[in-house]
Length: 367
Image (cartoon, helix red, strand yellow):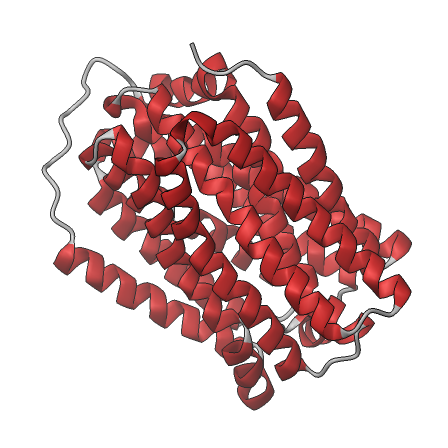
């Protein structure tokens, strides 16, 4: 929503902005190792409070950034601070719910979490037009402080038992071993492209596509992305219901959703070449949001494959792939945009979804 003014004020090109914002998921992925260890060793509440404080600092760094290097610092700090924003509630649910209920509640958690993206559509467009892009970072800092206050007041958790026999380094190595193990290798592979597509299509390139290729103003483009966001809110809850109802077919649901999402992105780019109306883009973006939301099944597959005392590390191992893939593919999309335009950048995510989905099908399931 603010790509054009960010490029102007920071003095970067479109692919440069993609590289800068790609530092966010890269830092996010790297932070997954210590976050997974902290969740199992110290508990959800203290980990969440520490990370929210870091996120508030990162937001303020973004608000005062004056060039590419200061914005890079802000993105790294934000990535570290936000690294537990999905992991903390998902781990809390995984440790307090039986596996047969976790898929549904995992979908509910992600659906509720995605409501925050509503603010980055039309409301952000209005805020940028009225007060500039820095106001968006200030608003994020205030939201982080509010979330930390809510966690401090509302979350009730028994103190995590001490794990004196294991060092932090041993726990970190366990995260890596889990990520490479047969039990969760499949979800790790498909996760590499899954969240990357959400960040790339809805987050980075959706606005420039609608404004620069389709010729929409900022607020109308925000309205279309708002529709996609509603789909990303409803989709995980629907996916959780489907996962619980069709547990025997979870792998097929996961692959079908990701291949369908890839097709929606490819059709949107093709429609740009054939002059399809903007309403077609709106429909395709909504369908993309609903289909990619089946990614929540990855969490259910991981939860079912490990015992509760290792679930924080196992989910962190998968999230390394979730956000590491986002960093890699976002950088690749920036290079593709410099070569072939925004359509080429979007096709990077469609191709990655297809490749990772087919690779997932070839991998064996857990023992």
